Amino acid sequence: MPKEAFPNVSPEVRAILQRFTSEAFYINEDHAMRDRAIYSTTLYIATCDVKMKMGNFTAHIFQDIIHKGYVIALAYGDIRSENEIFTRIHSSCVTGETLRACDCDCAQQLEGALQRIAASGAGILFYLMQEGRGVGYIAKSRDRMLVQASNDEISTFEAYRLLGLKRDYRQYRNVKPICQLLGIDPKFILLTNNPDKVNILKDLEVNIIRSERLEITPTPYNLAYLTSKMEAGHMLTSPQEQEVTRIKLPAQVIPFKPHAVQNAQRFIYVSSYFLPVLPVEDEIILSETEFKQCFGTHSPDVLMHNQPPLILSHQKLQDRRFSIKIHRDNLTHWKKEHQGDPLGDLTHLPYWFRVHVYFDIVSCEDYVVLTYGNAEPYDIPIVRIQSESIFNRFPLVDTDNRDKFKATVKAIVQHGVGAIVLLYNDGRGAGFGAYAEDLMLIEKGLSHNTDESYQKLGVGYDNRDYEAAITLLKEHIPSNHVQMVMNSPDSLVKKPEYAEALNSHKIQVDKWIFLENF
Image (tube, rainbow, N blue to C red; front, side, top):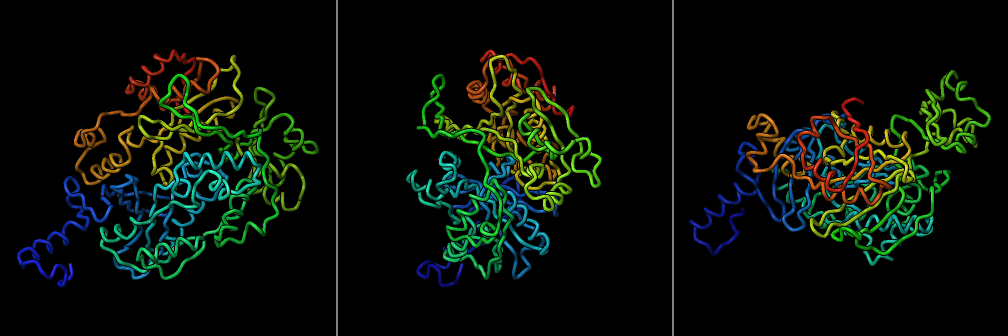
């Protein structure tokens, strides 16, 4: 606190204020069980290590006391001693970073920024929960529904305007207070393609000395999105340089007015659209027609023994479908020399899932249901309730949670019909703050395991709303017979609420699929 602050107060009061500002506005990680520093609208929650593919980061977790959103400051190296450091102010994207969607560039920008920061030796990435340029996933999903209904004749920004939205609701007011709480005041090199972000941060007195671009090569699935960003002023050149054909949706998208679910009116069905999901382990799924188009002049067996091989394996699936495992690098190189050959299209074919988005007026949470295929009453779809972990949006060394999702996706697309209910439930439903504090307590030796941490936090073993998840799942399966994906038999035993929800809705599990066996 400057000496001239509060000039009219007594020396005793000034001493109190001086002591308060020197203690209350900085993180004391040695007092992890007690102190929670706060400055402006930013509350410190926890600190823990995050091991990523490009190096070990330290995650400082904060929460805004107004909108309650989390902010993660991922620090690499000694950020306190460096005069100039790279930074990225990154807004969340659940579809690209969790659901493996390939219709945006968010996941690539996130990983690219982390790589650039690690390569520089010191830097910090601020991860803000600001889906859809700050409007949240409900509005973002309705934007996607309208854009797809127009076959990309309107841009995402035009869809926002039609929905009565501004083009950008993001705010960055937590960045400067986080720097205060961390005790840093560096000169930042901002990794961004958005000049508006640079100006906004400068207005917030964040010391941005220059910016560097993070640009990816467009694909047929994100070309329209990147083109709209370029036309809106983002510093992009790749969209106009690419000669790629924009994608065709698997079916027409019809926009609709939000409405309450008939048998559970707490849920408002707000949107539905198609999501192109990255193939798992380069395994492509083709219909019989697509198979004939791609392999009309090629034999898959010959391509497997090609030098270099273009196909690693192939098999026939039920419902006249085919699984083709490609050698992506070899096929990408081959495609450049065989322009126009439909075989080259295998390098960018996704899995087409349908996204269904709901708003729960009870919990005020979004619910996301992914469906695959057109299930008939005689089908027994593969289904899973997938709990998300925010940390697993990052390129971690430990990919266990991501692998579970990928294994589920693979099982569903091979089977032909299925559904996934996504729950934003870090820490078994206790929330991301509790999850981060659990990690911090274990790392500091203050707890031996999660169960002990939860006792100290006053949190039960499982707080997820399985009743809500099963209610929405039933909206998308044609009968009460399913094949249910679980982590292990042990996880089922520990979740009596899970079995109770299945029983209350008369869901018959014809087969349990345990991911520990994958």
